[in-house]
Length: 305
Image 1 (tube, rainbow, N blue to C red):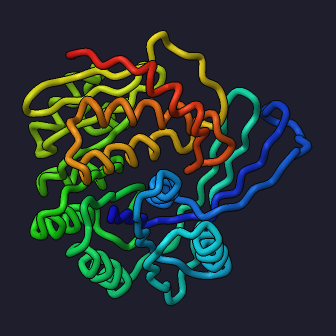
Image 2: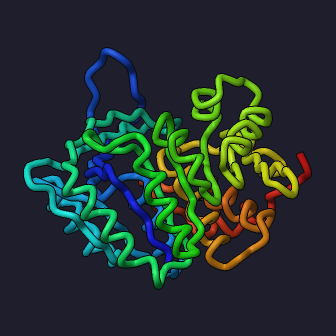
């Protein structure tokens, strides 16, 4: 089983428009709501691929009830932590034919008791867990090194961890030694102050991450490990347009599967690139076009970096 943790989940609302223009009124073509947050998106991808998963997340209020209902409809197994007074946030994606614009609410504040309940829930699942995914922002009220606590807990149970976070939520967890971290180019720069992705990834590896897999948009993935470095991308490069919201989460799903199955990293990178591309072509985060995934998988090229 692969467990995903989403400390700051959301009710994702997607508006589809013909073309997004700033400072203008828009006619919305379609409206779609679903359970969201990075770890939920990862769990959705894994479930579609036939993997056994469990999503751990705190929920509260009407939006939290809507998230729980959607998880149940999708058949996604979950362990939910009830919030005494907090309300699950909403995110809005406005998608046109070329790209997506995101609006994200800050989310509720978690009490110490609620965070302890989430940690206890994760610990209860670890004996049967093959890989743990920690994804997204930390909610208000939770200390910046909270992911480090979960990394150490997983390592004590011999469970590998994929951490996909930014800012202090990422840097404060490095000392705990996550198995894989997956920053994007902007997050690399924010964490290190270094513009060159390869040098920035090496800096985060020195700080404690055992493997750094950086997503570089159209340039694919860069992996820095103790035994070698690789670049993975589609070849020839593809002009992929659509909704990139869940592309990074799809890559995390592939990396988590690789850890669970003990797949060599270059092979896991191939699946990560292909899944990311197929997700951009799908209308909503956490979903992917299977034919596109299979086709892209034959087009991924891995080269030493």
